[in-house]
Amino acid sequence: MTITATDPRPRERAEKAVGFADRELPFPLPPTFDSVDAEREYRKEQLADGFKIFSRLGFSEGVTGHITVRDPGEPDTFWVNPFGMAFSRITASDLVRCDHDGNVVEGRFHVNRPAFVIHAEVHRARPDAVASAHAHSLHGKVFSTLGIPLDPLTPDACAFFEDHGLYAEFGGVANDVEEGKRIAESLGDHKAAILQNHGLITVGKSVAEAVWWFVSMDRACQAQLLAMAAGTPKPIDRESALKVRRQTGGHFSDWFQAQPMWAELADQTLSTS
Image (cartoon, rainbow, N blue to C red; front, side, top):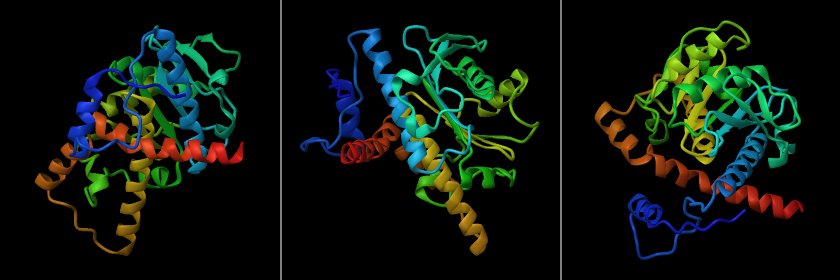
């Protein structure tokens, strides 16, 4: 789906982010919509694409993992993957919409209870979070066993410096609503959280943002695990880490950095069609 933005503000943000205004941008700008229906379809297509990206990166494991996006017309409901369907096979028409009480209000499939328990409470606590992503990615779940936050070891990791929570408990599979509330509380107003012995969760103002932060955080976990195995890592100093976070950790820069993943997905889809 291709939608062209008519609002000049995304262009202005893009020019500020990339540092030049006299060249063409090699990606579409954040779209604007003339109807709720158009925005809903766009969000659903983005969500289906997000699952395919997760699949290609090896983030699927059995029936675990979920990405959600808030419905633009009924923001107290959200779209999520159907329980048991492979990430690689999910299309927009397969998605299920449920409310914050776990009731399926649209769609023909069941919803994984942990998906409702975790994401309903995150969306309830964070009205600004349009999308949320959680999966049992290898490096994220290994790092989560350490019970420590990410250190600012690289510029990529600086995006999460003092901007991710740490949930220090593990009570089994997240089937209890109270567990979802505790996870949402640990997330706070951050872009991400590390869930003890469980994995990562990220949020964003779009599916692209939530997916990008998840991918980036998992790689930051991998980098820190490798650095710790090799020796004693030297973190970036706080002032520099905060400066880099301001440069790379904002709501437009994360959307911007996600665009190559969507372009690669489109190319791969065309090559196999």
